[in-house]
Every structure is written in C-alpha cells, then in structure tokens.
Length: 134
Image 1 (cartoon, rainbow, N blue to C red):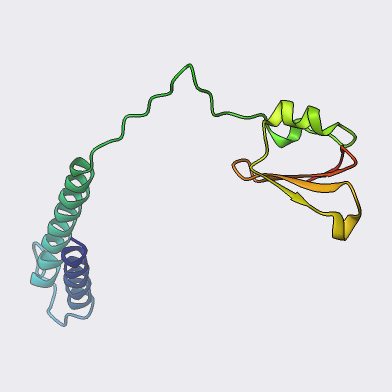
Image 2: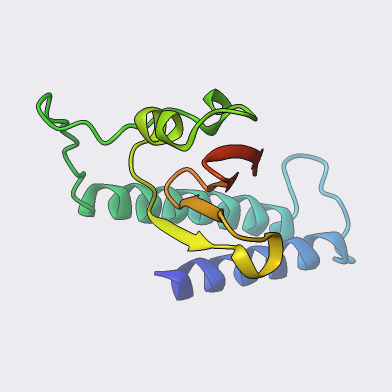
C-alpha cells in the first residue's frame, strides 16, 4: 500500500516538474500538454489515496468497548493526596499501591515510596505520613 502511495507521489512530482519547466508555448485556447498531464496525475493520485485510506479503515475491525458496572478500575487522582495525610488515608483514596519501595537508606527508618504506576504517581511517606507527592 505504501509503495503505491510513494509511486503516485513521485509521478505527481514528475508531472509538476515537467509542467513548471516546459518550454512549450501557451496555446490560444486550453492548456499545454504538460499541464493536462499534471491535472490528470493529481486526480489519479487523489483518487488512489482516498481509495487506499478508506479501504484500510474499512478492513480493520473496530473494537467494542464495554465497561462492567460491577468492576471499577478507576482510581482517584494523586491531586487528592496532600502533605500530612496518613498512609491509611492515601490507600483508602488511591487503593493499594502497585509497589511499596523502602527508602530507609536515603531518608531514614520509616521512609517509603508508594508507587501508583497506572496514574504515574509516587507518594513519599515518612513514619506513616505523606511528605511529598510526585
């Protein structure tokens, strides 16, 4: 499919160059042969492009999106988490974290990072309280 579009584009550019640099005199009526070829080439290229694009869109089956009312995968936003909140409040709002990474070597005992990968959020806690939300 792409090869057809490339060949059509090259043909169109060749016809445009021929029309632009043609030394043929302008007739009293109508168009020069180079201009007629350019117009025909543009029409063929447009029709071919439209047929290929529409055909490819029709060949792909569309996925049916359904959502069950019983299972909700939505979580609250990290914007609902504030500094000073307890870790229990965070997990109540955002759910269980995807990963809990201890950060005791860097920030001391009781430090951890709660990673929520789906919402690209990291909540830094120290002794059970939120210190920073990334």
